[in-house]
Length: 191
Image (cartoon, rainbow, N blue to C red):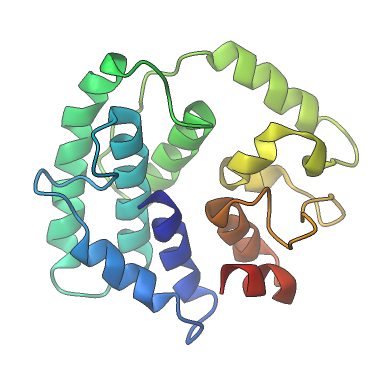
């Protein structure tokens, strides 16, 4: 659900490239409780997937029922945030992804909670170390897998694409890259 939500957002940037199918998938895949995420309950997955889905629907959803889907997603997030401590582990990059998406959601007028962040200080040091470099080599850091949260800090001459033309073999990170850079190779990777 998380990667699909990022793909859905590309429909505004790349019309008629097939990303509209991701919007339809989001519409069909909302759970009964209003969340999105995997079949097995992992609260961090449900939280981040739901947050990404409602941001996508707010940005590109045009169906009359999308407003209701978004509202159900917002309600689910407020319930999920209190359950995050039950998971033994976070999803990859959760601290920076949740913070970034919650800020995006708020800027779109969505009512979403900010998740408590474990290991925030360690992530902050790692992010600052990367972003303070004059020329960033994203290929040498695991932060590239969560590039979607850090995309505003990327420069045009940063090394980003892997040999398979993705950003860290991540559909969501590659989609975020394509939201700021037109790159046929990365677009072909997602196609």
